[in-house]
Length: 175
Ligand SMILES: C[S@@+](CC[C@H](N)C(=O)[O-])C[C@H]1O[C@@H](n2cnc3c(N)ncnc32)[C@H](O)[C@@H]1O
Image (cartoon, rainbow, N blue to C red; front, side, top):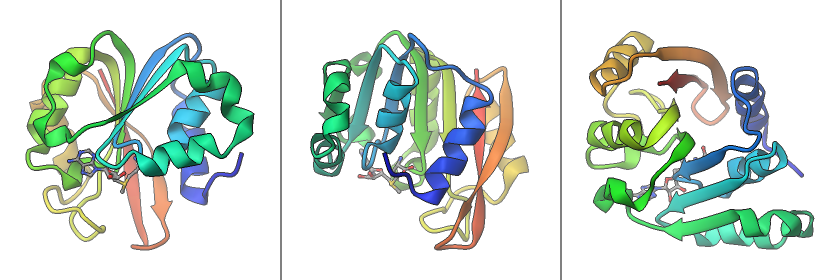
């Protein structure tokens, strides 16, 4: 399996705090499916990937024969998260949403929905000055924003380095 550098950083940070073994996991804005592959390897029993463009995810999973054993545990679903209803998902142990919220019409309502359907939510979002970021300036604002979403636990667990924008992106663990 090949990972880009940012994904390796992200994965190393997350797995210091979370075990995916036997968990039901959802990846919102799953992109090329890299996180889906990693959580399958780490023992997740069911993984849902959601994106408006699932061709990139399916292509990446399909061409890699190493993943054939895991394919029955994976469902990739095409969806516009802006029109997403919480009933689409249920009983999720761990929900991840990396670098996707900045593209949505109403990211805070989306995150409030995450809280209602998942025990643990992992979030990474671009801040202003970092690519698509247009809402949040820094970690202090992000912390307050996540508390406003209704989480009791909001922990910054690490930062990835984004080569394209020369910014750090914080990963948040929320419960
Ligand atoms: C910057 S990529 C991040 C991909 C992956 N999570 C990662 O961290 O590498 C943003 C992803 O959000 C998806 N996306 C953007 N707007 C969306 C929407 N309204 N509904 C569903 N997916 C969306 C894009 O198709 C893309 O795969």
